[in-house]
Image 1 (cartoon, rainbow, N blue to C red):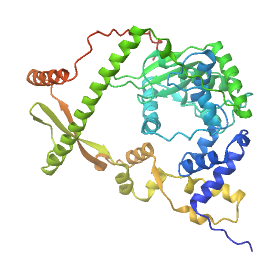
Image 2 (cartoon, rainbow, N blue to C red; image 1 turned 120 degrees about the horizontal axis):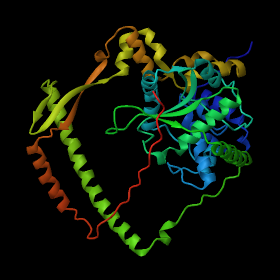
Image 3 (tube, rainbow, N blue to C red; image 1 turned 90 degrees about the vertical axis):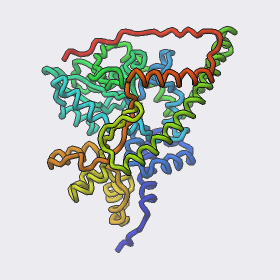
Image 4 (cartoon, rainbow, N blue to C red; image 1 turned 180 degrees about the vertical axis):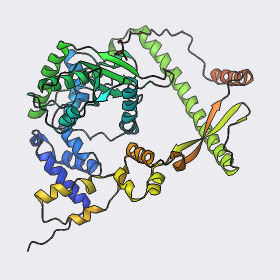
Length: 438
């Protein structure tokens, strides 16, 4: 009888990730220390295997970086082909999931629902499932794509990409990466016999930019298709050969006219002065705000009130952890186990049957908040039950208060005088693409 082996979840995660990494075609170019660093950072990440999968090719969200470099233009977010290749070869530490990224992932479902309602669209579940299941392959082995959505509108099929304020703006000069992303998705679908009528970019507006989704139709450009194939194939070839191109940092400062350098020097000093003042003021504001919240909470203030021109209102914030406890055992469906508890079982059953699987039934979990909200709605449970009270502070726009603020601002400006020379700033406004007809 074979002896049962006991290993820790961390050891199990390391074995699983190492096995998956060794399957990558560029594995022979990995430095062992960099492999260990990748595993150390990703071993408790619930999307760890997804991050490994991303190393196996060039995805839709990445192809715009490569095409921009191929065309000799700047990527909107400052990334380069050389940097992408370093990522794929594990030369640089893997990027940690930021709050902005998490916000994008969580908000995507909300944006999708708004889009589907506003455009009377239905999801093409069959095509989405085939793509998610890996059934759609490209003759270009490096090409990867995971669609935000594939929908039917008026009997026609559209490929849709959703963006939110943390990762997108409504300005045309920021869209080239997204244009390339949609083109790569369209190419992969068409190659597998799925006709796409059009490509849509749906952006959630930032504060002050309106209350409707901004939906733009991306017009198909065959030259982008060609550049995707050529640039992507060249970059993938460098990854497979372990060939990292040199960075080409630009030293534009050396060639600047003296008057421009002097103007930028003045602007830098001006910025530094105002930044120091704003940081100090913001710190004071936060301190006062904390003390106000403590005092108001202690006295049970829960309705709108105005103190010295400041409108103070209480609000509520959804608390997923409390909601989980209230639903009971059924809420386990909304739990997302981390790598060491979720992804071990099937792999170890097939590859290491001597390992005791029972030890992986305990561990930490994250909460699938959109699914939890759906569960609450199904049970007709009020989300307000799971809210924590918070206070919002807004300035009342009264003439008296504006005068007070104006006098205060004048005092601040006096402590940070502007440079003598005026600064002219040219703003270029581009016309946005026409949104798809509702």
